[in-house]
Amino acid sequence: MLRLGAHQILATRIPPHAAVGTTVELARAVTGPGQAKFANAVLRKVAGRDLDAWLAIVAPPDADPVTRLSIAHSHPKWIVSALRDAVGSAEIDDLLAADNARPRVTLVARPGRATARRADRRGRRTGPVLAVRRRPARRRPVRRRRRPGGPRRRPGRGQPARRPRARRAPVDGRDALWADVCAGPGGKAGLLSAVGTGRDARLVAADLQPHRAGLVLGAVDGRAGVLAADGTAPPWRPGTFDRVMVDAPCTGLGALRRRPEARWRRGPEAVAELGPLQRRLLAAALDATRPGGVVAYVTCSPHLAETRVVVDDVVRSHGGAERLDAPSVLTGLAPGLGGLGDGPYAQFWPHRHGTDAMFLALLRRT
Image 1: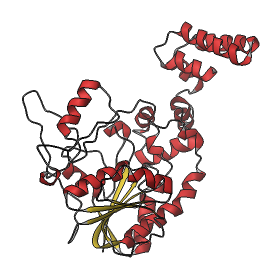
Image 2 (image 1 turned 45 degrees about the vertical axis):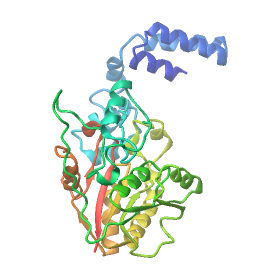
Image 3 (image 1 turned 30 degrees about the vertical axis):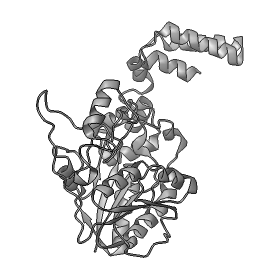
Image 4 (image 1 turned 90 degrees about the vertical axis):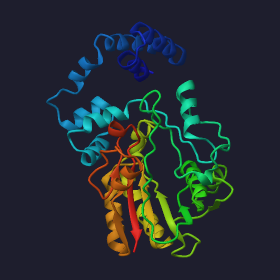
């Protein structure tokens, strides 16, 4: 209760007297009058200074940099160190501040169910939208669309929205069978299945947990196949797929804006525990891909031990894969997109791109 009250006083627009009064009443109702008096005294002391003044006391500029950043931005020290290693000292303040900001909502117009223009109109009319009621496109059947639509930015009134030319990760030969081996709960699988339908490709989506596979089943279209299967020991034959996506289980350090409590629920030991699983999933995905096919390895974590280190280890040990330049592929899809790194891997950042800190590696099976 004291933490909630202090947060209201220092970091919201709630008047201090209202924050103190509400917290004191809550303390009295839960713990009795004695603790209510204690809460009143502490919060009145807190209200005597603003946030900057308190930070100058508890996290002075001459303190150890990791300790100062940990206190100032409410991140455990091990996460501060890991993120600083990934993004660099010059941007770590901005990254940690972005982790504490409210994330923006992104609309996805799934081909065949909604158009980008309709999603854009809906978003501007209603504000943040978590879901759009999707109906089959009437004027533009999905098979006639060259590129799956997304919410488009309009350069100005009366000017048409510019559609960047799609540049796919190159696949040698056929491009008809895709796999999502960590598909639950189904958001990405649903989009992939819709895109695949527009390209005459079929998606096979799998998840280890049957209940998550059930969620995937409700998200994909009728052409997709869904099964509960272990991505490290899958039931399909080697070399089956043209494209495989591995959205590997990770610490989720890239999504702390949407799950702020996760920073306090995980410790550094989680990185070591997940590493072997991530390597097995990526190696199995390469085995499931035919020569000339492409594997996308994705994590919602920028931790180097979950991203570059994993991919480098698997490529070195597998011996049958080459790295593609992911930033150039992404900028081909969205001209003007920058700040993804020098390659061959791509890294999104909340403070640069307004997204989660997603990592992407593209590997071609050789």
